[in-house]
Length: 163
Image 1: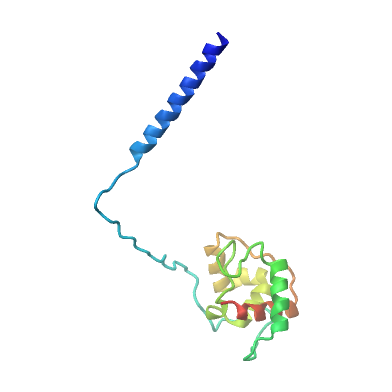
Image 2: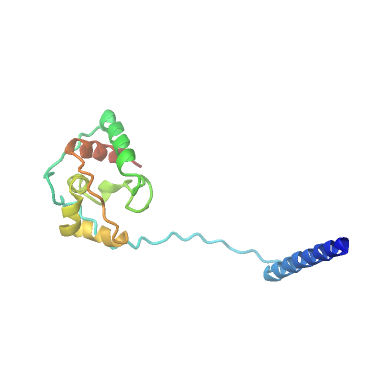
């Protein structure tokens, strides 16, 4: 009796497996003699955040001038600081919880970048670009980590190296 109930269970299992395969094969379509053309479409940039290179933001940084050559020691320190303080929300080369840093100086002034790092609370309340970024990134606020000017400057230098 025990043996026959085992056989019945095995047969039921095999039947259910074979039925599942048949249903799956019914969903597949077969095309003979034609070739599908693949088209690659780049997604359009749908950002509503304005590019404002003349906006210096709100905070202590009123003017900054980068040297023609990147200070590699400062940039290395900036990368370390970024990795220790910012990677929970930012990736260097892609969107994440916050915007990517690659190409930041094509959209924002160096002063704006340093001011948002050092003074995110006030920037998110008063600066039009920061407000637009807040909206675009689902109202996820940038936390104020009380980053001093020297550290913000090091990160700003590292951002110059990103391609």
